[in-house]
Image (cartoon, rainbow, N blue to C red; front, top):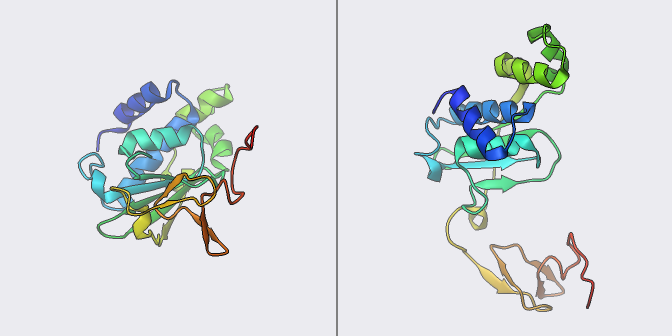
Length: 194
């Protein structure tokens, strides 16, 4: 894996700005890959799946650092609103969940007391803070189903209400009928016309 500074610069270029979340995301990705035995995620891209739990800056940094992508099904988004990610080695089935500690914000003063601006202090401190103070690390078991694996679509069904094709087991069964999630009422949008 490339060094921290190189990965951070690449992440900033992709994300559009430098922020504390970029530092946390790059360090989290480097640690996660190391814990599951992946030295070069771009070389071992078919072995790695990452679950990110927040739609914030750190998730972009994790994706850029590891090369995982939603379109390849190697990046999974689970909207828990937590600054956390789980790194899963498909070959060994080993997985670790890493979350940023909330007290790392307060600890930033310890590592960069000379920097008065809070954001700048966090940027500097998060880059040097020991892993044990920046992150909570736990080995976890991930039960990844066959329909959630990377690769081509494994199953398609057609919603009996709207006719949309639903892939990879994401349909809802109700009264022995097949529905897409929006037709079953599990949606983020409401149609303006019916």
